[in-house]
Image 1 (tube, rainbow, N blue to C red):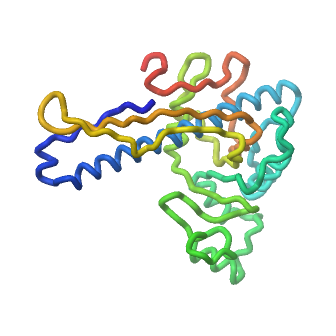
Image 2 (cartoon, rainbow, N blue to C red):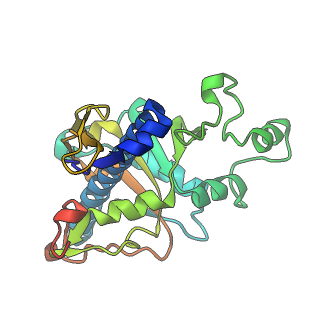
Length: 272
């Protein structure tokens, strides 16, 4: 439930008219959307890292892919996609459909995809120069819809999956929803996660409209109160539908059954 209100003093509204009210509402919708995205990331990270601990305990490989001097960013990305092709027997899923996949990457990881030596990007070519000029990862899509979009982070496709750049701040916000052994995770808990390749079939979420905001007169003083009426939830049914690409120094914060990550809104956690 998102129930933070915004107050607009009448004197401000009298000076700027309804334009200011609309801007306030847009800002509130942005905050809500940001929170929904952070919660979704938190749920996906928690599920895949919890399952990764169980897999390692069962002498299986972890669900995440670690970059190294021999497995660079591009190779790790291709590996993550290949792991999604393996599906998840636990939910009777033979493979995770490629058309439902998306990749979310840090700006620094996107830079490595474009510049890291030893990748499959050939920059001394016509297509390579087009990629450098436009910034898009694949030069073969020439439509308006395939161009870089800074509003939603779209930066092109690799291996048939669309890539979206995500602000590092979102990783920190996601950590704010996580706790381990009744203790909140540090804001830096996911700093060594560079990217996530996931399939939408493994994550379910439902929220009512982010435009559902009620405007009522302020009870104290003159002005208006913007009351969002947003509620919903998110669950990840398969940690194997989420493949994290991590740095070589990443360590799973889940080290025992007692330290498995649980989800709780930041202001509902102990000590908040």
